[in-house]
Length: 213
Ligand SMILES: Nc1nc2c(c(=O)[nH]1)N[C@H]1C(S)=C(S)[C@@H](COP(=O)(O)O)O[C@H]1N2
Ligand SMILES: [Mo]
Image 1 (tube, rainbow, N blue to C red):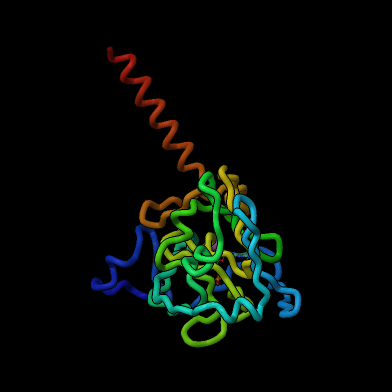
Image 2: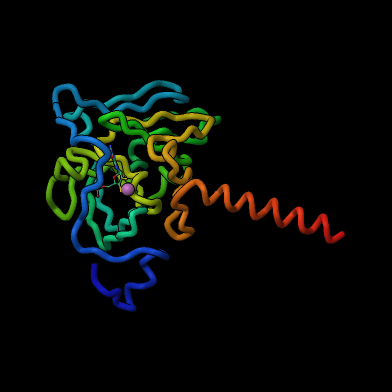
């Protein structure tokens, strides 16, 4: 960790420190990639399921995004250059039913994370295959990971394999284990018990007002 240059401070959310290294954070083991069986699949509330093989996926138009990464464990890494397929390119090829409002992201090995569709289709969200000019290392989600720069990094599923479109918002893996359902780093939406505290505060406030009348 290094001291934060004031010109960069505006890019660092509250409670975060900068790192130039890139820590690996995985629950469990790095899965083995098999190019002949890998698919990326869009399913759930869609007019028709769509899936791409690894070869088909590599033929999609590629883009690059330079973004900052913010991990809930309090490190941030600025200016990451990711290359891959923009989520917009995926959405152009999938007809999502109008009632769909949330996405469950499915990843190997048995990792899931939930987010609202608006966050997934943000301009800077992509399915990345390269980082800073090199193929994504297996430990960092290679060959393909989701990157959603505007949310804490646990929403950026490594070894991503599909999007399930839903009209409900069930919690994914970390969300079931106490992480926040939304995860905006600028609002420090770290853990779900913040919501409980917020609700308790609101209830206490309401009770105080009632008593004061
Ligand atoms: N499939 C999968 N994706 C995952 C994880 C995981 O355990 N499995 N960990 C998440 C968490 S908690 C973080 S902080 C980031 C870490 O990404 P990195 O190891 O490339 O830094 O990946 C996220 N994506
Ligand atoms: Mo994390």
